[in-house]
Image (cartoon, rainbow over the protein chains, first blue to last red):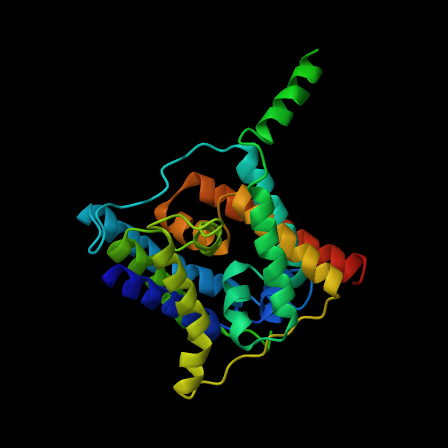
Length: 152
Length: 141
């Protein structure tokens, strides 16, 4: 039960941060991404502030070794770069740039945004579900086939 | 740059960072929104409660903000439904394939010094900037 309450509080803080910084407004996000237009650097300040506190949190969590409420720390440890990571980030970036919505703001906007937000979130959930159909070795296998062809 | 809001951006950013630090130090989990939502498809036993609670916190945030007298910012976008749905599909699929979004890679991963997250953030930033450039200044969508 404390784990549930703590996760709720974390989600609440996250949502409040997105609202205070106006990152829940896609127009504000596009204003940052439009570096060749009337550029709005605000998003860099959001990321900067968030990364500093997140880094402090990581430092504290690693020093403690064990979380306050949970039996163990569940942190990603992979350091290798693979085509999956890069292809996924590229597809996400294109989708983000089309509207100015990433998953966090889209979910917060469900509560008070226009109905079109539901269409975006529904499509996003379908996209996440479609990912489950992807074979574990894709797109690495395709890259290897390509490489084999090039090497002759 | 009359629309530049550094103070509220920094305060909001600190709150987001606090949320990530909170979840890591107390629950031992990474505050990556796409991962928290994607982990519910399908729901796994013992993994569902905290994920649902975190999402409930996100949904409750605008209500709490308004209840304490805050004025919610506008939610402005000007795209057709097909573009909206295409973007949603790309964001959902891409964040799962790439193991993270703006929060998981951008805030938590970079805060951890993860090379994967630094590269992923660079890629999705460049792709998003290129997409905005194409749609606003070339195609004029």
